[in-house]
Length: 229
Length: 229
Image (cartoon, rainbow over all chains, first blue to last red; front, side, top):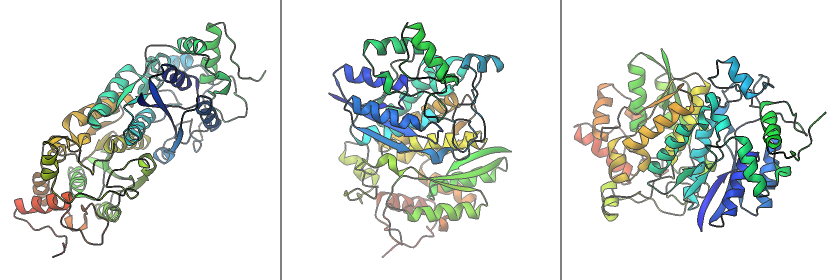
C-alpha cells in the first residue's frame, strides 16, 4: 500500500479523485482539505462527509492568511460580486484567454505545496488532485493547466528529494468525463458541493453550478443536489 | 519601479537579498516572512528589524499548521535534538548525499507558493529568495537546488498566468560570497540572526552558526554577533 494524499475540497472533481484512489485498492488514502478564505464554507462540510463516507483520515488546513490582500471575488473579505455567467461567456469577454474573476492568486500552487509538506511529513509518496481540462481552457485558471501540473510535479519531486510526486488523473478530461467515471464508481455525489455562493442550497446559476449541472445532463444523469426553481 | 516581494527570514542570505533588491533603486520592495513552527523565533525579531532598517513594508505569515506531523528537529513540537555538527560532517555521514535533520518537508516550496499568492495579490511581479550553493550541496536541502528554483519559477510563471516570476540571485554563490557582497552593500548584519537554537545569544556550534562564522572569516571580517566562549 502506498500512502497517498488526495486534495479534497468536497466538489465533484476532488471527490471523484478520492473515489478513484480508494477504489484501486493499492492506496492508503489520506484526505487533505485546504481552506483559503472562500465564501462557500458549505463545501467544508461536504469534504468532511465525503471523507467519512470513504473511511479515510481527514485533515483541514487554514491558509486564508496568504490571501488577505487579494480582491478575488471568491473570498469572504472581497466586495466583488461573483460573476454568474458561464466560464465560456466569461472567457469570451476576455477574447477567449485570461483569468476569470474567481481565480485566486496561485491558490493551487499553494495547496499543492502544502500537500507536499504534509505528505512528506506523514510518509506519503503521492499527491492526487483534480485539475481538469475545463478549468484549464483559455487559462481561465492558469493553475490548472497541464504545464502547471508538470512543473509542480517537477518542483515537488526535486524539492522533496524524490520522496513525493504529483498526479492529476483527470488533467485531460472535461467535467462530464469525470462525472461519467464517478457514476461508474458510485461516487456519493449527494454529499458533494460545488456552488461558489455560501447559501444553504446551491444557487444553480454561478459558473461552477452551471458546469456541474451540465456535466450530469451530458451523462443523462440527474444531479442529486436540490436547486432552486 | 517594479513591485518585488523578498522572502525575509532575518538570516544572512535573505537580508543580503533584501539589500540587493533595495540598492538597485528599481524595486518597490515588500518583505514577507513566513514562520513554519521553528524553534528559533528569535529570527522573527531580526527580520522585522531588518525590514524597519530598510524602510520596507513587512508582513509575517504563520504557516506552521502544515508541518504539525513533521518530526524535523527544527520544529518546536519535535523531540529530536538539532545536530551540532557542520553540514559537511552531516553529509559525510550520509555518503555525501541526502537531506539533513533540519530539512523541513518542502518548506521552501510552500514559502515560495505563499509568496507567489501574496505577490500577485499586491500587484508584485517578482519574488526574490536567498537559496545558495552551500544549502544545495549534496541535496542537504533539496528545496534549494538550481533545478528546484528553475521548476518553481516555471510553476509560478505558468500558475499566475505570467503575472509573477521567481529570482534567486545567489543560487550560484556560497555563503562567503554572499557575505562579501553584503559587506560591500553595508548590510546591517548586527541585526540578523542565523542560529537554529532558540536562545538569547547564538550558540556558535549548530550547522548554521558554524557556516555563518566561517563566511565572515573567509572575508577577513568579524561577525558582529556575540557568541559564547
